[in-house]
Image (cartoon, one colour):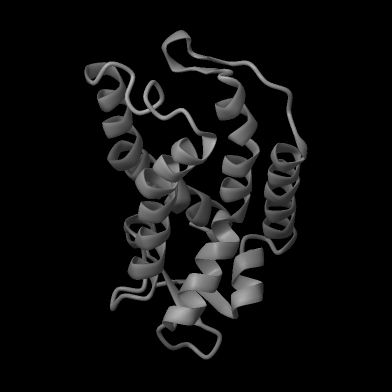
Length: 174
């Protein structure tokens, strides 16, 4: 299978697994703990902190530590027979892994910031499954960056991503 297909499938596998690990406990907490944390956190910064601690940091840690590990791959990459290496073919360093992950997850973190007004105005109603807010520059920017990532990846025929290019890493078939 070409990396044009293998890499997005690996990313999908990782995010389904991470969603189960990070989001399902939040949904259960909300359901069984009477709306926690959204009902009890009044400041937008408290909700943002909750999201950072329960979603962002675990995702960052997962990508940073698995891609710089001895296997040089996340679970999704391992299932798709891929691994991350430095430009010289060695295991990536902590610095390369943090840079790579930071760039890869940047659109998601910008989107989290863009949701702060939702928390401030009370426009988030999880029990009703709706958001009431005006889109803002951060939400538009996160989508523009995601589209740039996809266009770059397609232009490179799946052989390189923006986060590979900037961090000096590459993903290869094992």
